[in-house]
Amino acid sequence: MNLRLVYITTSNKQEAKSIGRKLVEEKLAACVNIIDGMEAIYRWEGEIVEEQETILIAKTPYHNVKELTGRVKELHSYDCPCVISLQLTEQEGNEQYQHWLINNTKNQQVNYEIEQP
Image (cartoon, rainbow, N blue to C red):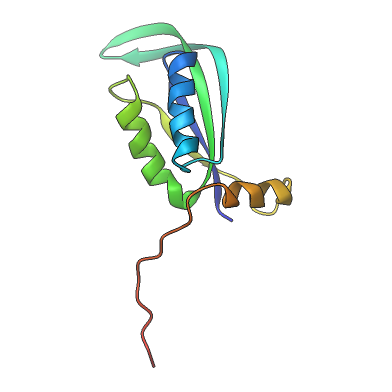
């Protein structure tokens, strides 16, 4: 089924909720989870920064990842938001949930022609 967890960091819980709701409304993700209160330490523009962030995890098939990433970048307050896609192992986990996930996201658009013999 080629499913993904897309790990996204946001500046706060409200931003995570706003982006997450848009992703679900637009069927770019079937579901999102929000984890508040993460501590982040990173290098930005030559400085070491320590901040609180909120994690947003979106669940979607691979064929939506590119559009989802673009949408997050449009909605996000960061200049360079963290959006990382993690592939799920095929045939592991709750198959019924995986089917639900597929049925609650955009369908894959196939843009090719089949040659006639």
